[in-house]
Amino acid sequence: METLVWIVHIIASLAVIGMVLLQHGKGADMGAAFGSGSSGSLFGASGSANFLSRATAVAVTVFFLTSMGLTYFAFAKQHAPMTVKELTPAQSQAPAAPQQPAAPSGSKAKDIPN
Image (cartoon, rainbow, N blue to C red; front, top):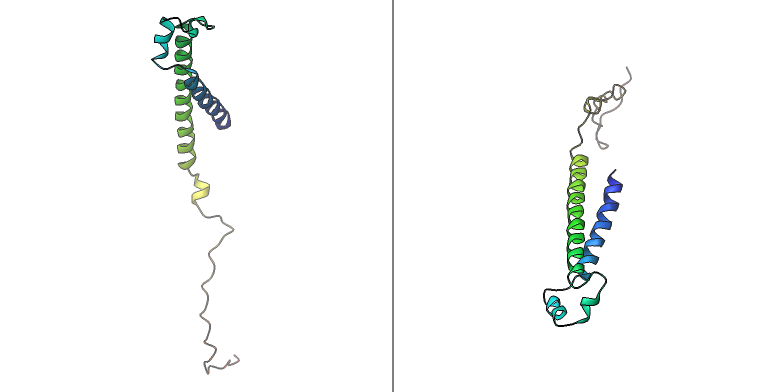
């Protein structure tokens, strides 16, 4: 599920970048009013602006929702609940017996047989 959200997120981000770059600035509408070539475009003088602005708004909304979804997945991974089995030590792992400190190598203690 997280992989699907990542794919949609990347596609939405590329769509937002592309649509923002395709849009004309506010000054481009003035040129269309005086007979510039943009009035003969596919969507008309103002049709492309409306279409691109609405499509950009949809892509930004999808980007925002996928960002929130990815945040949820990251938070869920970080705070995964631990099970009781993980909290208790396994029965096969008994604590090791304490080690006797080794005698220093230079000591004069001799092994005395029992």
